[in-house]
Length: 80
Image (cartoon, rainbow, N blue to C red; front, side, top):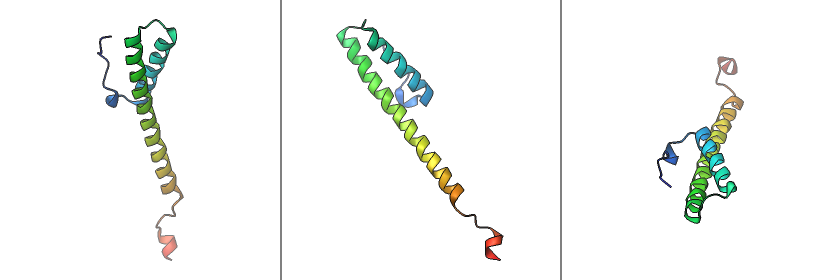
């Protein structure tokens, strides 16, 4: 299996997810030999981890945005 795929760390969420779907489909088809299957499995695990990293970052950003939204603003009305 020639490895000309992009580095996983450089992939965006959608790219990693789409490649993960393709890897799972290849594994489920059963046409790969043992060595190729192991390489696919390892790539799939790394892609799944990358997706989790992206999702964790998105959750963190949403939580920060909610916190900022819920904090009272420092306005002149409060000082009056």
